[in-house]
Length: 369
Image 1 (cartoon, helix red, strand yellow):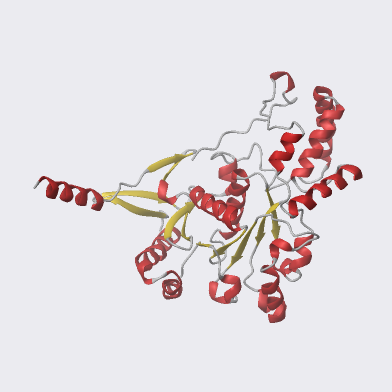
Image 2 (image 1 turned 45 degrees about the horizontal axis):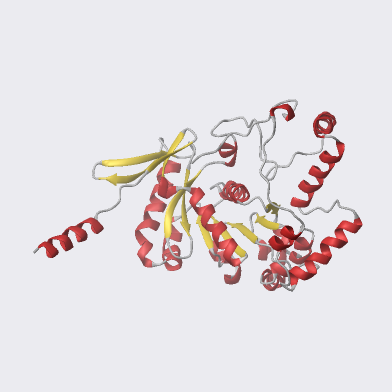
């Protein structure tokens, strides 16, 4: 009897639904299961295992695809600083090989915006060429580099592209029209029929109702409500095995910790343009930087930053020595960590001393979700 009672208790405990967790992000609340950050982490893990990952963003104009691509790229390079971010248009896909060859050897996040008219604008021949080149994307260039690439494609309707292009590891739907419900059921599976119908319904509520609100039931008589774009927009996400709702804010909201006017933007996503103002800041920076660290150390630090971005500023002799090492890496003959130990090199952690702070302190706020 005791054993049977335990079995019943265990059965009852496993059937109870876990109550959704509400978390804070900046000054806003959201359900943990709706976190866009978790999606970015899944994409990163897939990138680390696969090397090449494709992400599709699908939805009508002004439904948030471009912003979503920026958010994913920003979160990915924040999670892994080895990534560079590059944004392209559909014409950059026409000679895809040349587009890739212009990039550095670093890990890449490639965002291609609005590909809906690719075939109409450039013909089927361009599409066939693109299909063949995408399969070899990681090996385009002088040497076969084991760099990782996350390719983010943005287009209006999944039906409009060739199957080989629209198949992806991850897919985000920013909107769902009534005529698309059946097609999504076919793609994602009948078991997600309810989620797809709810997604279409909630998107309609968020964009057409006066309040612009959409809600999720937490328990009987208890619901959690969002207001569209304040700051989150509702989306449907598929990672290849499951489909779920997620919400995403604007990139500017993430960077400014919920503020309206960015105090400091992301230099990776939005590099500063060359202008009279940046030139004036540069002169002041160089003077202050060189004084506090001496010119030799300052120059070496800039060299290392350039190297992280894939730009080579080292002397010819150093560049040749680096290529010499790479030949052994290509053949898996030596290990980098063991090589570093042989030269007495080890990872060091440091912080910026108070005496070395910039002439105008520039503090990044911590972003917590």
